[in-house]
Length: 332
Image (cartoon, rainbow, N blue to C red):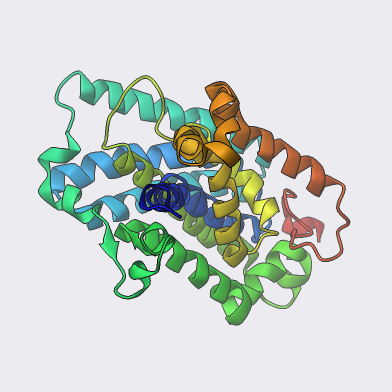
């Protein structure tokens, strides 16, 4: 393989991670929420809220850590609102989630357009943000041919996403609170009967999951250099994350693989022409595919996943048995 071809492949692998790690945040966050038995379709709006507030406050404080914390907190506040409506007030979860998406996008554009008209913070003007989002190569691993820089030379938020996914897998499968959470999602009545505080578990983990989603939104803001325009930074990623939960079988560790698979198709949109030019004999046909097809491809794959998994039997699935069903203790 020639050096030019090697560079194209490395860049392609690198872009798969760069452009699609927000899906991992969104997917892991939604898995945590759904394991409590709550179906939250507001991922898109929650990521948007985390993005706009995390970016603005992070820039004004010139601290990426503050930005991450702010995005988490505002995402968690959205989770608190969702839990209050669905857990305490017994509102329909599907409608509440969709409303939360509309609300979150409304907040995003209201705050963004309002601040843009006054003084929008440019990311490049804040050294700690700009430098904090720079790539950090992992010694040794980043030197592996072809995939080294593609997989092991990224910004700190990429490594954080993988760490969060693995930590949530460990939490759900290897800790007592995690096992209790799964019990709540499977049969809240039975969990309640043995002394587990169902309402508390739903509140805490809905807020935790939504906070993780908010960080994913903040990543997208930084990845787009904070360039605010008429298109939302999230751009449908929240909906893809909902489908990825099913693809990953409600397993945070498998979500890492799922993100990479979806990321492959999504990255073809920006790198398909480069691959076609570098490998004209085998991949030259990529250049003939209209850009619109690449743009639609992630959503087409999402639809295929939903159809395929809808006919899969319940056995072996990580789907919580009580997902989407409100729990009313007096009916136990």
